[in-house]
Length: 202
Image (cartoon, rainbow, N blue to C red; front, top):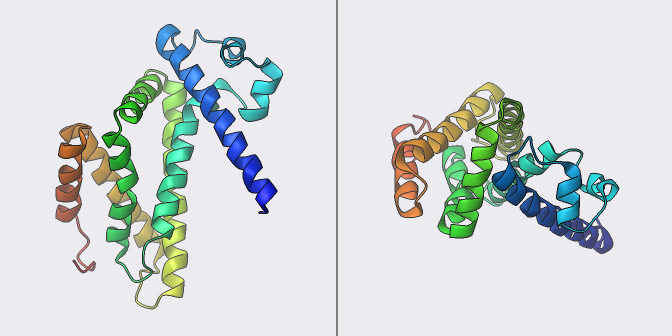
């Protein structure tokens, strides 16, 4: 992508973020189902038609936060050393979650989003579907990396299960240890150490 394309994408992302924040405030104040696209558009000073240039629906506004997290996890995983055990690479990529929990504003934002998602069966189903696709995408990334690095895990079934196990550790730590970063980080480390695959060197 050229510089112009990159700048357009940055600008688009900035507008999407502004729309998402305004929408989330309305969702929290009024309820997700009760908030209309017209109200979201009006809150950011744009028309309904302009809104649809950035999001296909108000559902997409809520789910955008998972898309952004997926991009961050992917970028961090791609940046890990090629000869690093997959389990360790996944733990390092989860640092993006720990970082968000260290930011009070981001932590409050994520709590609000999860509350909205959990209150809507439709949104929860869509969220879980995207989470599954994200895990599949990270599995493919690790599979491609292993193909270029002798000694890496090349069984797609094993890699998919490994990624799923890492996310299970993430979810368990968040559910049982809370989201305070000074507690969550060590809890995640302890959980992933306990479930570390036998073939992954420490």
